[in-house]
Image 1: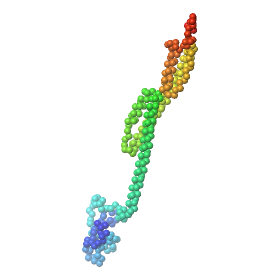
Image 2: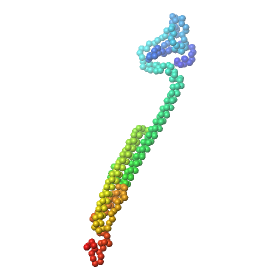
Image 3: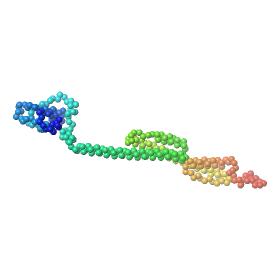
Image 4: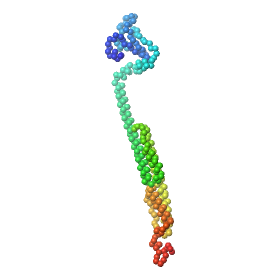
Length: 289
């Protein structure tokens, strides 16, 4: 209503009421109503102003009497409805100045840019974590298959296969850019790395074990071969098997122990040179002699 009266600046039959805060610290406004008929004592005063802007000017020395209604007690609803939080000049500045709008637009643009950068950074971080997780998973699967072909004991690999299938069955939780999904990728990558290290350790243990077994079997075979040669068999010292995997070493060890048993406990004379053991005409063989 006050804005409308200020813009019209027309003649009013009754002056409008005015809400006044005499002190800046006042919470409740004071309602002021100009008198229509001034008191005869103030007849020497000029006519009352009929424009609201004139009423808002500084009080004159001889102002007419005003009606001051009494407020029995402060009402919370009344205070929150009629008490302005900001002074008038600040309200006018926020309503009509372009600077607050420019500041709001700049803030929105800055928030949008920072939000886009944050989303891009989060996507890159999650993509790197997901890539590392998949690399570790594929490496552990390939290591298990390679260990089985390398010659590691299947009884030792079975718990690792069970653990790998359990890790494969776990799915990520949370939305796509959540911290829980990023933590899931990191945890799974560490688990697959641990599984891969276990597989490598089993391969090293298997290689060391079968290398020792091959050395023992080869030593026993050489000793049995020398003993057989002393008995008159034409045998040569066996060659060292060119093996670098537990599977090959296991097969070589099995063959060496079998040959060692045949040399130590021959069941047939097939290891003896028949040209030396053939009996000449009219005589006994060298063995019989």
